[in-house]
Length: 248
Image (cartoon, rainbow, N blue to C red):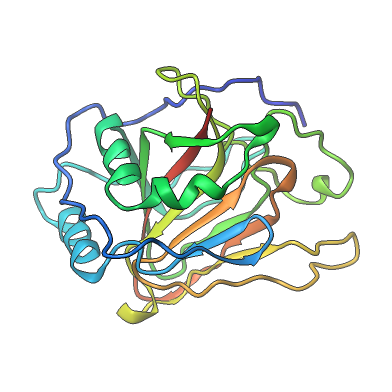
């Protein structure tokens, strides 16, 4: 298992067209971060009901500018994923998502490597759709400085999280997942599940945050990242917006 080169940039198969996203409104009160386990943070009502429903309507409309791609076979060293997905490179929306939702203020408590501070979001915005039976296999989210050990090799690694934004030079350290649907919509299963107490003998106790509509989940990359997976969706459709918190 080879190391990823330092400073992988935020690019790829992102759709290039300009996207007019639904409006975002500042929160009425500061966002509250809950830490169910070290390196995992939850923000309930990150997107209020009206906003998340507007995003769902936008993504599911027949004339939506974003077209999701079916899953592909995993490359060597990647975890299996069976969900549809797409991405768009949109610095303006990333800036709005960071500044207009209260996320910037909430993330000022995050500590980056070598004293770095949270500075913005990855402009590569991803959209995931999980239908019934879809899942994302177990993986670690490595940073480029992570050295695989014998425990790591028990599982398939997933190398897509330590991103360097070429425009700013900032590098990601946390994943941001925003759930547009959840148990409130009848979705069963699909939880992002973490195994922070993993040993060579067993998985240990799992941390399983509920899949709540409008909730944001942040988790660390690299050496402090827990083994995690997206459990299969048993009923309904799970929609997710994804970006990464960049540090400077």
